[in-house]
Image 1 (cartoon, rainbow, N blue to C red):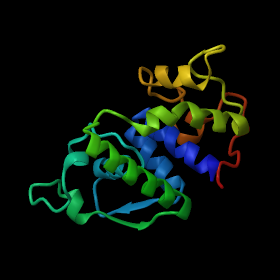
Image 2 (cartoon, one colour):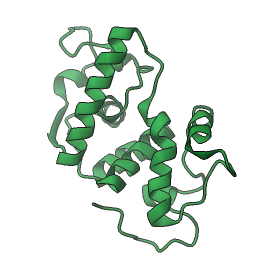
Image 3 (tube, helix red, strand yellow):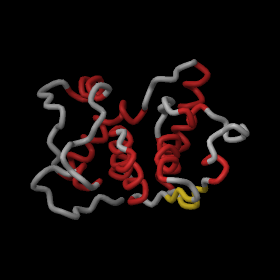
Image 4 (cartoon, rainbow, N blue to C red):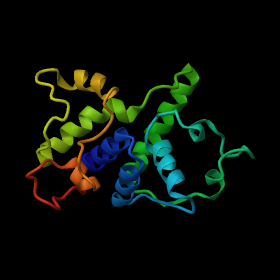
Length: 171
């Protein structure tokens, strides 16, 4: 479960919609009856606290809301990711009650996610921080939200050069 959560958090923090869609699908999340753009938005809404998308501020019941709110279905959401979604929903509620709209849990948790992935895939520390630790990496992650660059698939983007292809990244 740690690895699955880490993969999803790292993809969300990258802000790469294609990577977010591919990672969500790879982890068993099915988001149907919507376009690819709204599929990515739905993943952000389900699994990140970011509010910088218009859809994140819309009520699904508002007649003027994005059409995706009325058509999209999530028929499959793995149990471990369902728990993450519940936590994100609670955090969104707390943040809304405090008037906080500019915090992304994925970006805050990115250094921790990369640390978990590094333990199993030998990922190099992408920010080149020597002794700063997770706290310094979290601060810099706000400025550098992308994952490892130069790769074209979710697994390549999250695996370091020299890692075994097809390494087990599941639960």
